[in-house]
Length: 309
Image (cartoon, rainbow, N blue to C red; front, side, top):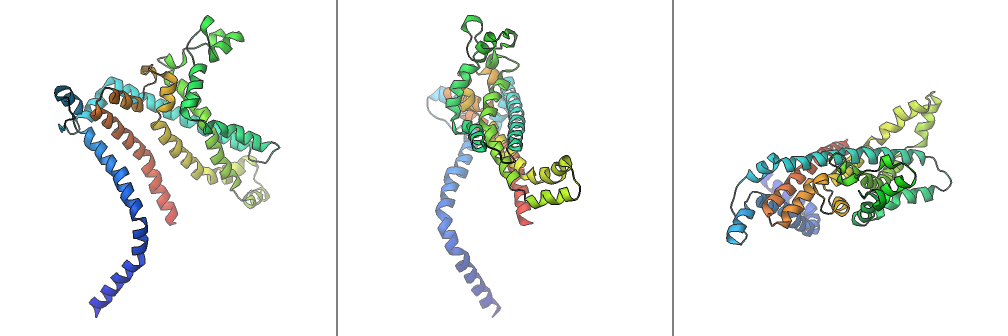
């Protein structure tokens, strides 16, 4: 009897979730092949020496070298420079978008006349592709000075502030930081939209209750509004952070082949592909994937715990 009940329970369970599993099975198969399958293929390629063997035989080889490519990459001064540039870019990009996005959302928190115009103006850069905006910013951040000056350098020259002229992206110290200016310009509006949705989602009753209890504006923001915006800020950090780690098109469209001052791992990956060094290119991609995972996985764990409460 007990075995029969167990069999009926299992059969009922299969009938319960079987149709749902059948419905999503095409998506599971496609994700398994084109996401996780290709991730595995990338890691497998990164543990081979394709470049050396290809030079010898002229064909794609399969010399397994394990983690040697990763060790070689991480000990190269050039790649260490790329990682340092990536850290500078990510920190500055995050700080700039969060600060500007929050300030714009705070200014628009209370409905004002022409709010739609301001909102559209701040969000417009996000609708432009990174390649298109990169072409414009390449002209704005031109390193030419004196009679050949264009963009910002020409503007400073016209208003008599020649001392502010800079080589911008070609500067060894500030090259990568110059790239963050167009990046912040393009995505600060998106962060503003996130924070504005957070502001508008806070019930008016909470504000009124805090004011009735005698809270001033600073106490209201500190104890009521800011804690409510914490999930929004965390989401913005995850989204902007992982976008900055993978940045390529904006950088390459602004700097063209002047890569040293603004090189990041994604640019290195492209450079390895150009010389058919697929193993090192895959190794760079694997490192970028791990960096993104370090940023995203804690958020997913936190979000999962919050949803269970």
